[in-house]
Each structure stands twice: as C-alpha cells, then as structure tokens.
View 1 (cartoon, rainbow, N blue to C red):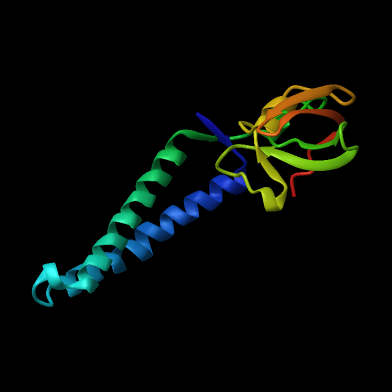
View 2: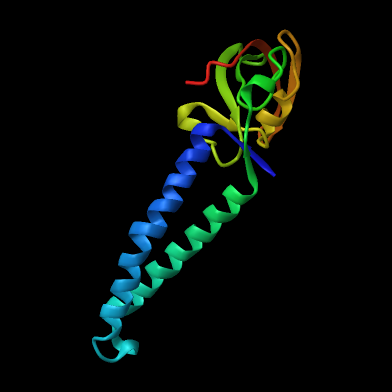
Length: 157
C-alpha cells in the first residue's frame, strides 16, 4: 500500500487516462499500418511501432497497479508535531552546519529538484517520526549524517 498526495494521485490518473484513450489507440493503429507494409522481419517501422506498443502497455499496467494499490492521504489526520508523510522539514547537517529543506513524500512523488525526498530514502527514513530539536542519524553511502530538525510544516503547495 502506497500513500499519495491528492495532487500526485490525480496526475497519475490523468496520465493513465491519456495513455488509454489517446496514446494507445494511435500506437495500435501505427502497428497495424506498418505491419501491412510487407515483410515484417525487414520492417524497421513495424519493429519500432511494436516496441512503442510494448512500452505503452507496460506503462499502462504499471500505472493501473500503482493506482489500485494507493490511497490518498487525508492531511487532516497527519500529526503536526512530528515528521511524517507530506511534512516539509527544515534540518541542519551538524557536520557542515548546512541547512536544507525537503518535503517527505512517497517514492512515486520523489523529485529531488523540487525538494521532495522519498520516505524510504536514507535521509527520509531517518527523519520520520522525529520532532523539532531532535537529532536524526541517516546512514548514507558517504557515511553517517547527523541532522537536527529545525522546523516542520505542512504548507502543501
């Protein structure tokens, strides 16, 4: 079971709908058209269309499975005093005295450039259930990070 923000759930559902109603019919049409152009073993267009068809079907099945096994998080039920899913956490790396701010999200929402880290990542997992002022220890490939929680918020923009 994965928990997603309403925004991400809606994005995945829209992508699935687009693939099923728009993309797949065109891909299927391309396979039929290129397949009718003679010898399929020598037809690069047909092979490419079949590859794209497989890729599209794979993505559709993946999205169906993700959505089937996901639930939208009720943000009203989330604890406000400790780090949890969808928390925005500001913390200080005690070794370098560097402050960072990330939102803790499910793996399907992770986007480092947007400041969203997975709750399953070493840092995300270490921060979970911690309160302001507590020290989290994250085991990362470069060693042990000691992180002090500075603030927790839920500004879900």
